[in-house]
Amino acid sequence: MPVRDFDGEAAQTAGLPAGQWSRIAFLEDPVCDGCGSPFEFDPGPGVRCAACTARPRAFDRARAACLYDEASRDLILKLKHADRTDLAGLMARWLSRSARPLLEDADVVAPVPLHRWRLLRRRYNQAAEIARPLARDHGLAYLPDALERVRDTAIQGGKSAAGRRRNVAGAFAVREAARDRLAGRRVLLVDDVLTTGATAQACARALKAAGAAAVHVAVIAKVRAGADTTI
Image (tube, rainbow, N blue to C red):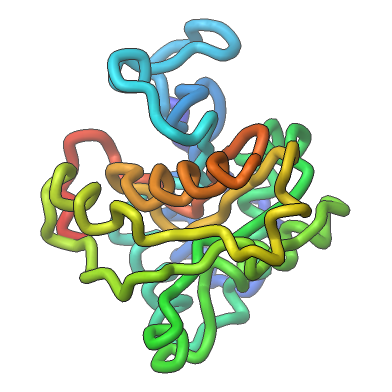
């Protein structure tokens, strides 16, 4: 499986204790071009896993920097809930590597939004904290307010795949002021974790309905297929 700990690549893990980052299961090619899941062997460029082939997603392609496990979960929760926004730049550098094919095919970068009440409580959007330096470092337009979450949805953790889809159905909309900047553009949508893909798909549908030519997804961590989805 194409999972590595990148021993010796300190530049990718600046600010983390060596023992912590060496446990992170980074993903590299070959991966499914549709969802970013790792392949056991290289089937060739552009190949998609059985799940993506059987049920195409609303977004076009996806990449994740690492697997979602105990090592990466700790860092992501620190970023989301412990004011560790200093980790965002590090995670943007991880995405610069794992999502490079998507970055090369993107025109604009947009984060998955929080509902305004949740944003008030948390004070920042962790996806936006990652997306901002990622766009800057690659010279791409950054649209932090392209999407809005029009419903304060329940937490996705603990829901089935179908329940997650129902929870976010119609929950996202493109702001009127952003429509002209999205029309005909290829959007890189940034989030922290990809589980079933329900949130990313709901965002992708809204973006494409507003005229986006393509929507690719870049996340810090991806839940392994078949793993517990209580996160």
